[in-house]
Image (cartoon, rainbow, N blue to C red):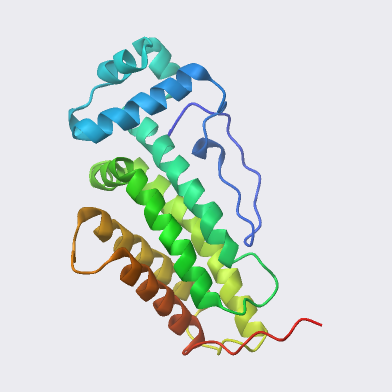
Length: 231
């Protein structure tokens, strides 16, 4: 189990995905929980996650070990909760380009602006993102959590691609879900490389511009036709 939270089996719509119950702490106003999450993010920025113990997390948060286990079963569950917070903020940004039913007159500009915000968000929480990525290699549950979080991006992207094709603005092509999955994971790995400082000669502005162009050309084949003028 990722964390001690009520289970929920309610289905959610493809175009407007909802988080599963483990993806957000039960009470955002719980001061002990907030202290624990804040202490964890601070510690992760100071030392490798693998070297951090539950006792150290509890002490830094000013709580007892039993209180820690009231909220989370393992430290990896806590890391999953921290990652979820970052990913949900990212999701709110990304959905701007997917959920509108009106044709975007400048989708490439929208994607570039959104990715600039997402990259800034990831840089703000780089320690959490990098720690989670490293921990996935040894924790199957965390890998499953991350894959499910990314699916919250893939499903609305799939609906957006299908809608653009149905409107005639985008041509038919590879299966929409396959294309969306490829583009989302490509973007995620590219942002991760930015946090690691790989390809240092590429600026953030150039990176987000390239990501936006890959998305647009991947879906439309070329810059899309202008949206119809509003009547």
